[in-house]
Image (cartoon, rainbow, N blue to C red; front, side, top):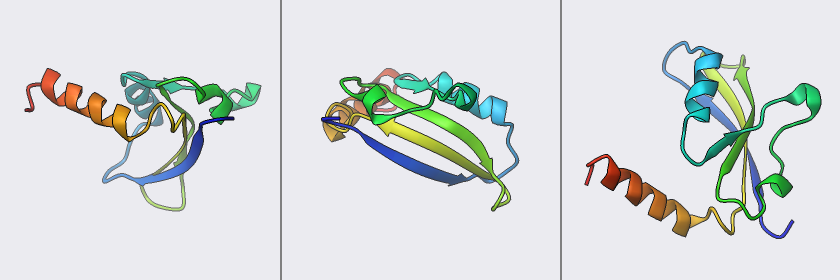
Length: 100
């Protein structure tokens, strides 16, 4: 893969959550694609993200080692979804939501 990176992300939330709602919120986020079908070996891989601006999220699971833990596997093409693209998308979000 020419460009791509993967991250195992662990999140500790402040309160109880519904994993189905978490998946819905992530799936409804612009620029994010969920690939979370482990039974059929369909989860994010760097080759999937190559030449794509989307961020791919999968293996969305509870982390039972902490009270309100969540585990995610996140993949993106770091050459396309790098600091420059992120900065533009954040600025567009702030502008479109009248936050600046």
